[in-house]
Image 1: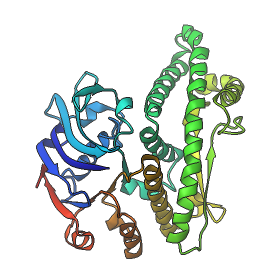
Image 2 (image 1 turned 45 degrees about the horizontal axis):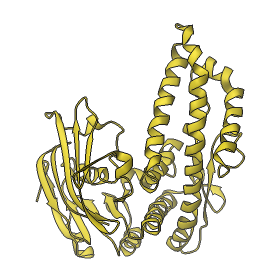
Image 3 (image 1 turned 60 degrees about the vertical axis):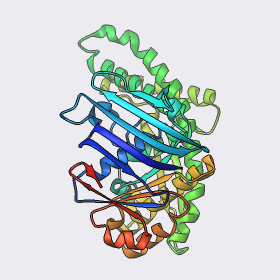
Length: 366
């Protein structure tokens, strides 16, 4: 898969800018806060109409603009495609693929990208929300209807949370509580099956990568964790639904007293172990970096297996965070596909990769 060219108008800090990319390695150079990550965000938007930084399209529109557009020529799934995304304040975004109107769900799967950013270096030690986000971003590209399910779940969770927060002042709200709880249980069952299946694939791919990375001295393993009543997250959707309902019934009073949603897929986590010990609790800084790198490289392998071709790999200012050994490990494994690497200084990376250099300054690309 490749992105060949892109044009931005009113997107983040870009007034009007365009860039053409090499099918191999592309080094995007520039000082901090010039727009390098914004450019990667625009590329990522092409994978399914969603940003990796925010859920809200309005945040993608420049301060002085009423709308933003992203226009790009990409190659994926054996064909050339032109994708045009338009975001306007107060309106739903419009997506055109080869001139045909598409939903975000319909766009997903035709072009894929894997992002590795500085936040991923600490994902091993961060809270569960970051690991859920890692899984959700990946699954949304692999399974097009997943993003729609996730949006529906967020909507239900926000509405139920509002009921739990306000029912003391408006007791009539309780009439709707059980319905929202039931809907959350149904959507949770679907999300849990997707996440558990992906976690299984991620472990299978990441374990040998990590062993190679660590010179065979460490064994990486994972455990997908959801609400306690779910005995098998890979069971049928119906079985999982009934088990989540059991948890919901047991926690209904606690939810009313605490004002919080205590049951559902928003409680999920992906537990990561090194040699049988919790990586979050015991991993050193070096082990944390190695494990995080292994997860993202495993994600790239899963995408390649799924689509039959490598996704675009985007490395957002992470090489400067790595020591020489880890830099070489990453650079030696990124062949065979297109890569976009952002950095503050291009000389060494460009020389080591032989990549095309694009310079970003004040929202201009050259």
